[in-house]
Length: 71
Length: 407
Image (cartoon, rainbow over all chains, first blue to last red; front, side, top):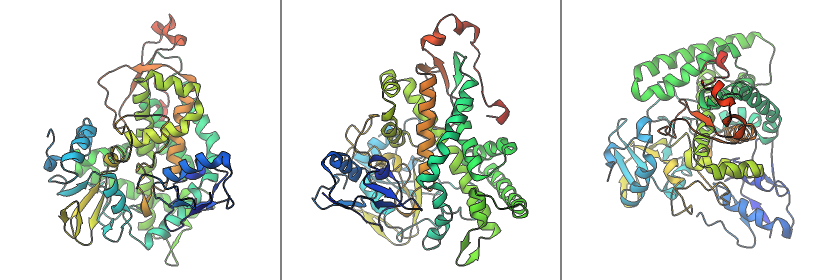
């Protein structure tokens, strides 16, 4: 699973950064930046999927099609 | 239906039963019209609110996000500003609220919290709102913003008269808003004569918009918003969470035993008991939502507090589940107007609760009729063995820390 954050959608809630700092960093304005652009290692997958589902802007997508069910 | 849509309101006593009202409205009248506050449409469903927040061209904030207004004469900044000026105003303060800066604030929040608790740690009954929930965010915010300590009483008075007074005494809200305006103009003059400081006021003073420096009007309008947003919302959230925890010993004990749960619990308290239940927009074009046509020019209230309890999005939506995993709540708003101070707010709530629970793990409501909302008193009675023994008799009077700062 690889992660992409849509910069046009991210509004800097930092929910992903708090949940999985290993995968999601932030820039100086507080917007999300993917720091782990490689394959997400097995032990972080569940937390990363949780971060995807907690993003209220639906800004995070994965290449394995795991979508959040909020919409 | 217990509340008719045309009588719907989201302030004061209407909040007593608003969660059951939301539940009924979501089922029977998800898009409704109220006659109050000059007349407005309201949206109760998460998906409808989400779509409106993501469509700022149709749902403008220019006529004010607060319904009714705080008594301000000009738009609050950046709350009531549409793109593209919105992004310029937000950029002035975004770096100051980024996580790294918030991290550095953590020792201050903890220290202030500990000191406030020292003031009532020996009492059997204490006012968790006036002695704690209201004081902690004020001190932290004033420090961060660069507002003088000697003015704390005035800040509390202004927040009271604008945020709460606006529905009961709108003329006084207008008078208070004028005082706020004059105060920040004076502060600006003083600060311009002083060396530059790295606080929120300093960031605003050096801010520019369309290549020119921020004007005195804009500075005052930005500071007004920061004051009410910075003081009132975190205070409400901490108070509401303590109100809940006082009645749910199992959750309280779990948070004491598993403090790492506090991150999720904080989001859950924000979802269920948020200080901002609704934010208004004004339609720039006709829109149709669930078969209902809303016309250009009409006001629309996005009921974030109802979206947060929408059973189509959240399992067990009307209950606080302190370890809730999936929680894309709307408490801070979403889209381009996401609360600028959300990372400060959630940190104040999380630390405010964590420090208090570590010192005072067991308590109950001293007045069982106490309501969940607002920033009024919240008397709590300690039930932990530390004071529930003979010592309790000697300390029966409610204690108030931070008295010098005023309630």
